[in-house]
Length: 414
Ligand SMILES: Cc1ncc(COP(=O)(O)O)c(C=O)c1O
Picture 1 (cartoon, rainbow, N blue to C red):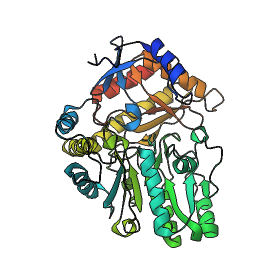
Picture 2: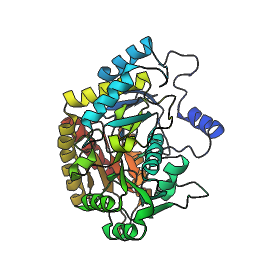
Picture 3: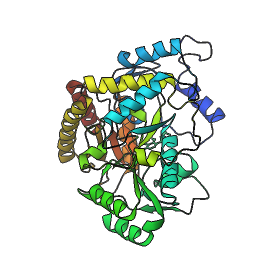
Picture 4: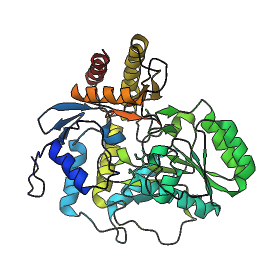
């Protein structure tokens, strides 16, 4: 139990739902009709207030890739809390700078200069600002069903209707069909000289685990170069070995001009960054700062995360367990009704839930999600119709645990 008078431990889901209803802004959203109170995490599992164990196959949405409370990550972070918790970037501290150095080594191509923030949204916002500063252009191209964040600009490049709440959308953002090269080519032919950047997730996460058609990104890259448009990749979900490589763009051999990363970078500690080349970075010289961006605790944790990924070869782990998961889901899809074709890459996998007529079935997906939770597995749901049952477990998941996940799904579908 947490040793603090501020939190009354294990109040239970009913009391927490009451607090949520009374004290949060109603937009705050949660999964499940009967959500458990999660009180503890350990490796691939989380535990609720009744002591029930769940295999965490959604990782707080691609965050806990190294597992919950991983001692190799929390120990150095706790040590950092004890020695120096905060100064902000107007003072010199080492963890953030070592992290920038390390990121430049793992990033593809010549992406070598970082600006650190506390959330993915801010990294996207910063990436878009940088693109405008560098190109001196205003328009931005984004993709249908993308998710990029909650601030004004990040929400406006978000294509998913569910997350586009701004009542006064910006007029210089155009959304094009994800994966449709012809519309992209046509748009740049007409407006290319006023477009600062195209922003996209190389594999859409919240949009329903969508992988673009082969060759799409290489063609997008070429068209961007032809029109002087920057390519911004939002690898906030796909980065850090989720898809079997450090970054998903490596599957296509495409290097963006700016990349936004977050989530798994901190494995639960808030940190994000946008990373770019020397040349583009040189356009951002006026003062910029983030109070918590690259704070010593999160930066120390992120350094430990990168070391953990490397020493445990989490890229290969994601690839192998991803294949096992995909094989199992394909077998299920071939033998059960109501399932579409599984899709994804590495341990970023989606299974469409469909009705007897083959249409997207978000209601049934919710029912499966709830039953999986009751069976001890936390999965996710994505896609515009919220019907893509989504699995993004820790990259440390074992062969046996992956089998447990598939067994649970098999039993629930039965
Ligand atoms: C692809 C992508 N970009 C950006 C964000 C926003 O990140 P944050 O919630 O840390 O602001 C998210 C959040 O889920 C995301 O999935």
